[in-house]
Image (cartoon, rainbow, N blue to C red; front, side):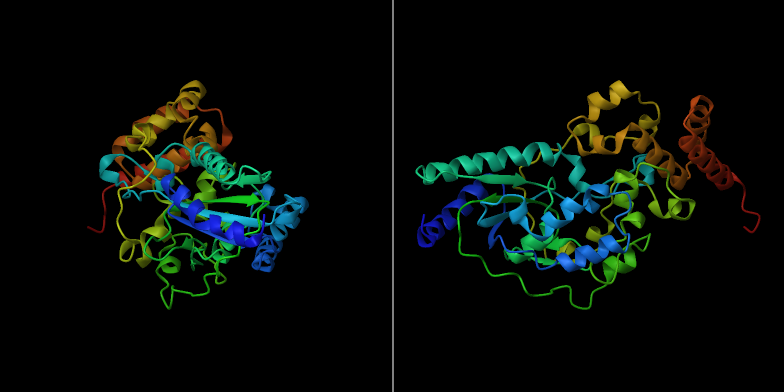
Length: 360
């Protein structure tokens, strides 16, 4: 297929992708990724924490050169699918906060099937062209935000999120490596963050670094999802009542709260078990109930032990004296050393909060 013929497909592919729920689609070449030196320095500085899949040598090389993933690839298609932001739960409701992306069925289960549909439609458009492709959505060794920037979707903000004008940052990214040579779209070369530093100033754990990357070991999302150990005492209070993930740097971003165009056309359905989730319920969960409730939800990634850890920290930070009894009952039956230490910490906080203020 000639380059000219391939480029006649671009608008048709964009229209098909939009019908599947993707709001923005861009194309770039398979050349090495421009931001790779920043990523490599981030790895060398130790900011990846225990995210070992990011630091494997083979994965590092593939992130620099996508050709190592698929030798026949000639282009990368980058796609963005928006999801609705949800307001932070408050202590008054008894519920803790959950990152907005996790309020629906796991995007790892939803988006790949949509990408396969798109591939089938591309094949229908060019039935004589043998298609080779790889699809990803946060599942492979790709620098997704850098690729999205190279395809013209948006810019990488100071909080490390990709930002799309009039959309903000509440969206999933996905990629298709394909053996069709498309004329690349122009990269998004503007920095529309300007002098704004709201995300940096609002981060409770000070995890946002000056070069638009994060210290994952201090990020609330990492601490409550990927982290498999306890939460250090110096960071527990800063985690607040986040049960899973964190949206703070997105919640304060003007591109989300002032400039994003509202839309009700989301291809995701709210999970009722997430909307009404109480951290006290998590403490009493057994593995079978956990698996049944969350096996198709992002919360499953944290595992039951991780969610219980997060629930204890959230309850300790909420300081509701009525939660003291359930924490003490949980402590009586708990055998996990990490959870025992956290329960003792939370109980001490609640007891201290219930003492009269002698300075009042």
